Length: 301
Ligand SMILES: Nc1ncnc2c1ncn2[C@@H]1O[C@H](COP(=O)(O)OP(=O)(O)O)[C@@H](O)[C@H]1O
Ligand SMILES: [Mg+2]
Image (cartoon, rainbow, N blue to C red; front, side, top):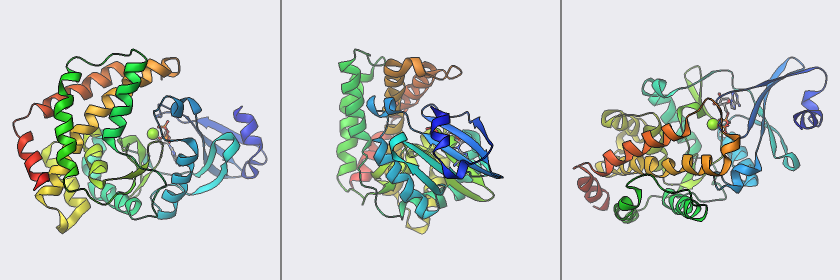
């Protein structure tokens, strides 16, 4: 299957060397060395979209092309729509891990601003809608919910209501910025993997980065300051912090849906249940925090 795709790509004429890149939980990402050049071949897995874990494959491809126009994403050298495959620029840099994020906040914020200032994506992404989708999937497939999850849903509805009091203009967002989707190319940070991309509130992007990198309040504040500069207000910071909580609340169920519906494809060396439990623990701690009411009041103001 991979060989068939490789044979269709003119850039891959002559001897090619394929190296499967580790690090992704979905799709196939392969480094290709051909003709003295290095590329990345990303072959999308329809099962990911079918399980509701990503946007449609056509949408992901279109958004990857738009993200490349901004320079935030890797250049798209070729699209093979029938094979749901993309030939991408190989970003010759260092893939970040969560521990690297605190020292890279300026570069990360700059990459986000670049992505967010591009032409709009053709689809919307809302973390509360995603949560509703996951809840419906868990219900339909009898996957169950973590202990105490249902009890927190009224509070989640209050967070949604508070955030919608003064909505921000939606911009092209990645929506899944775990550290491994950042590649540091010198001082510059590039962004790969547009599986969940769509027009969204930029504060979700920042809150999600913070949630994935386990930033504390000081770290979140520094990230928001790096992104917004002098425009940062208490309202914006409160928005980012509420979305941080929503990232943990919602992505807890990503793991449940992934192991429930795509269990057979799970990466052997990744503990999905432990990751879900850790996210839920952090979500619960934020939802039970005495400062939550103040954050809700601040975003409404
Ligand atoms: N264009 C690229 N150049 C260099 N490395 C890449 C590129 N795209 C992806 N990678 C590497 O492959 C890993 C997995 O790719 P990613 O697109 O994030 O797939 P997944 O959807 O499986 O998470 C990334 O964490 C990064 O290390
Ligand atoms: Mg990825």
